[in-house]
Amino acid sequence: MPSVPRRVGLVTGSTRGLGRVIARRLAHDGMTLAVNGLHDDAQADTVVDAIRAGGGVAAAFTGDVTDDRMAAEVVAGITEQLGPIDVLVLNATGPQPEAPMQDVEWEDHVAQLGFFVKSPVLLARAVVPGMRARRWGRIIQIDSEVVDRPPPGRSAYVTAKSAQIGLTRTWARELAPFGITVNTVAPGFVPVERHADVTARVRDDYLSSVPAGRMGTPDDIAHAVSFFASEAAGFVTGQRLLVDGGRGVAS
Picture 1 (cartoon, rainbow, N blue to C red):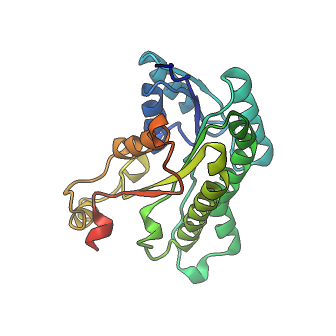
Picture 2 (tube, rainbow, N blue to C red):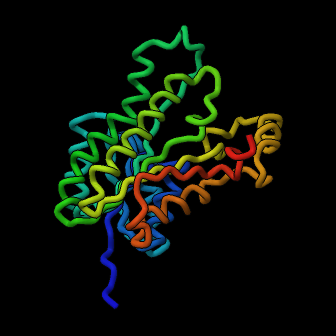
């Protein structure tokens, strides 16, 4: 049986939280990992060290992937040091302010679209030509259950996440003939560092709507990403996998 080549993966926003767990999972799967965070993010080296300590291969490439120049530099740096990118996981996010719709300015929408539409477009335009030439590629977006269950005060975030799903579906249709799959994973509420202040009441209210009877974990999301990034998922594209413990079907 021929050996599977070591793939190179980029996980944006992978210095903490969900992205960090996804990066470590893909490294555990045998992938060479490009860890990405902002230019002033010292956590990148910590994630790289953890991957290497577990026997994996990784390097840090910091830069704001919503910026045209920096996104191009990140991809160029990865390609030069690790090789061409085979797996692109679009996880980078930023502040998600809450406000009534009448107080949400167009600039607030643009800020969210920068993370969930502009950044994917910039990075995909840079990596897809190589994927097409090799006739193999995986693009995985991280969206959110909020698209199906929009909470009050989050209109800019929900709108941008909805647009991200549109990118996934249109890219999947266009890129399938070149051996490139494009899918999205939609987490339910998964406590990470930024949710450290969630109250017991909020957790109890959420748990009451989850048939699985527990909160989701970053590992649950990483498992789903791992499948979409694998050789086994070559015939799966244009799909949105909701990882929410059954909450979506219980509503």
